[in-house]
Image (tube, rainbow, N blue to C red; front, side, top):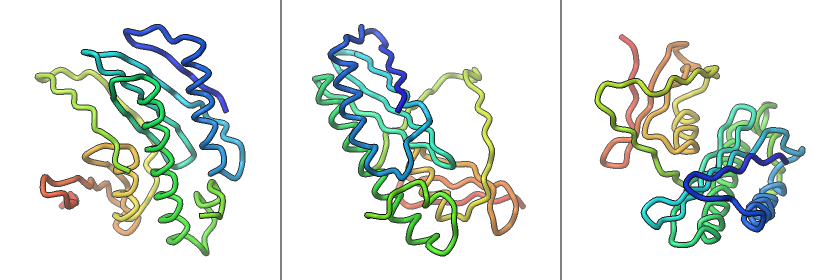
Length: 181
């Protein structure tokens, strides 16, 4: 595994770096093959809260978790636990749905959580542009992907209609779907 560990408003010491790498190594047991993508870890301190954000890009899947606490080491423990729950939850759903098909299920071994959303409310200023390949998927998988990346909405190519759709989390905790007319 490769790690990209950086600090914002904090100097990442060797002890912290070793602790993060040791904890993230726990995730290796969930995957068939060694992970070739780079683990992106951002550690920051804001108003006395120690935050850790981990992003793991995988083929067809993005794992992301963020935790804040009074102690940096506790935040690392919490974020690794959250990633483990996400992996187990995703692995179970994907294996159940795609048993007969090959695909993403081969990413996980056969021995069988929500992420916080970063709110950026600026007036009408475009601050970021993202480009990504839209993999055709059904609505259920789109909701799963949205929850895995911790967003309140997810844009996807609907495999049934072949159109671009958006799923979103409603304020009542249920989900909505936006389709083109």
